[in-house]
Image 1 (cartoon, rainbow, N blue to C red):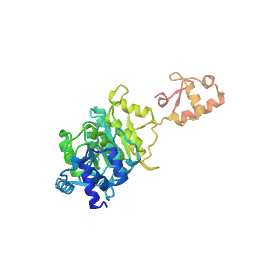
Image 2 (tube, helix red, strand yellow):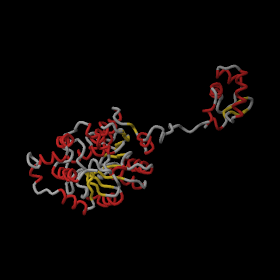
Image 3 (tube, rainbow, N blue to C red):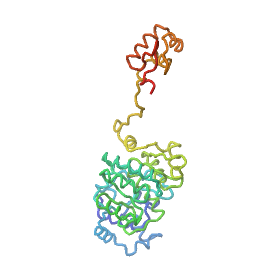
Image 4 (tube, rainbow, N blue to C red):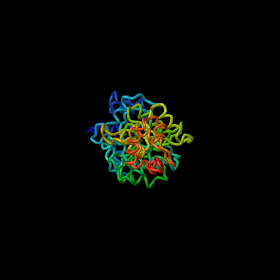
Length: 370
C-alpha cells in the first residue's frame, strides 16, 4: 500500500505535471515521487504550478466528487501498467503514470484479460455494428471492454459491452470528473455508475491533443489485446495499436471494404503483419485466450454427398450423363476405367441415390444434379 507521504507527492505531481511526460516519469521511476516532488516545487519550469497546491485538499475534493486516486503499490493498481516503464517513449509520451483518477465501482485490478476496442470517430454503420458485436461477445465471456468514450467506434464498443452485461471502462483524456464529448454525458455517467471512468489527467483537466496521445498508451497497456475497427491512415487508433505492439500485447484488425478510406489504416496493419485479422468476437477471444481455450472451428462449406465418395466413384460419377441414360460401356470409355469396375461402381452410386436407371443405361439422379 502506498504510504501517505508518497501518495500526496504523487497527487501533487499528477496535478502539476502533464500526463505521460516521459522525462518526469523517468525521474519518478529512478528517484521516487517524494524526492522528485521536493525538487520540482522549488526549482525548474514546473515550480509555479506547485504554489498553493495542497494535495490533501485535492484528494478530499476528488472524494466528494466520487473519484479515488489509485497509485502504484495499491492493491487496486493494475500491474499491466508497469510494463510502460520498459518501453521507449513515443512522441515524448511514455512511462508509468504517477497514479490514476477513477470514478465508478469497477476495480482496476480486474482489468487483467480485458480487451480494448478502438477505431474511427467517423464510423460507418458497418464499423459500429462490428465493434458492438465484438464488444458484446467479449463482455459475455467475462472480459471487461476498454475504449475511449469518443464518438464512433468507442461509443459502439461501450454500448456493445453493456448489451453483453459486462464491465466496460472509458479511459479519458480529460479529468475523470468531466464529460467529453458532452453529447455522451448519459453514456459516461452510466459508465461511472456501473463500470469505471479512468484518467491520468487530474480532476478538472481539459481534453488536449497531447493528452489523447498519453491516454492511448494507457488503453494499450491496460488491455490484453487491442482490436482496431475502422482507422484511416492518420487515425489516433493506430497510435493505440502502435503502443499495444510495442508492449507485446495482441493487436487485431477488422477488415473493411478495400475501397474504404476508413479502413486503410487497419488494412496496413494486417498487410504488414502488425495485426491479426479478426472478424468477430469469437475470433478475438481465441487470440487473447490461454492456449486451448475458445478455439475456433475452421470454416467449412456444407457437406455434400460427393464429399464421401472414393476417387473411383467420383471418376465414374463425372462420366454419367445428366439427361439421357448411357450404358456401362459408354460410361467406362468416358471415365477411362474397366467396364467391370464401372458396373460395380454404378451399383454403389445407385444405392447412394446419385445415379438412376434410365432407358437401357444410367443417368444422374436429382441429388447429384443439384
